[in-house]
Image (cartoon, rainbow, N blue to C red; front, side, top):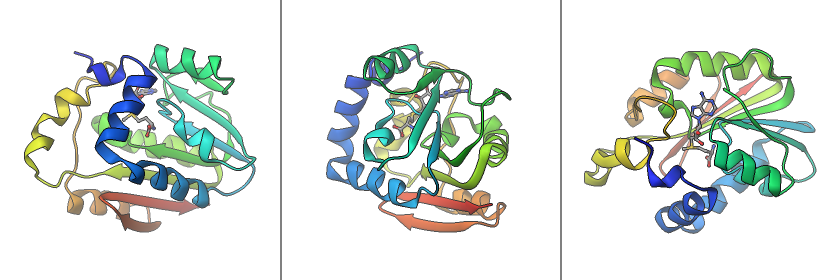
Length: 183
Ligand SMILES: C[S@@+](CC[C@H](N)C(=O)[O-])C[C@H]1O[C@@H](n2cnc3c(N)ncnc32)[C@H](O)[C@@H]1O
């Protein structure tokens, strides 16, 4: 069942801002600083928040949430209703995957492979990890995107081991782990 979190981009942003506060904007600023080149593809873009944190780069976002995409289009953003694993997504200098790998646990290698194929200069993956907190037991309900059957939040060690397979730079900050892969 789809969580109310994914009913509209406004609800999504409202709830995430309550949960993460100012850290959420700081995180997107940090991601924007890591972008290289003039074009960015955002795989599983959600509400496309990254777009407003970029400087002058061309932004293209893909997601399967119809409401998120129609709203993004109304805001003038280049967002497209599409499965992020589709093979006809054109290349861009930087490809980002933010908070999406745990939504596609059985496809996480496919998603990384797709990002690697599309990126001309850099791949940036950003993931939260399971810290074992009480509220995290309800993540699979609160965070159900209505597209994937289930989620799998990796522990910090599991996520680090997964990232290490790609031989990139790993950065840990404020409960999130970043993987930066240069081409
Ligand atoms: C936690 S949200 C992250 C959204 C955004 N990246 C952010 O950080 O705000 C996960 C997103 O993945 C999208 N998604 C899941 N599987 C997908 C797929 N196969 N193709 C496209 N989008 C997908 C969902 O619709 C949801 O918007």
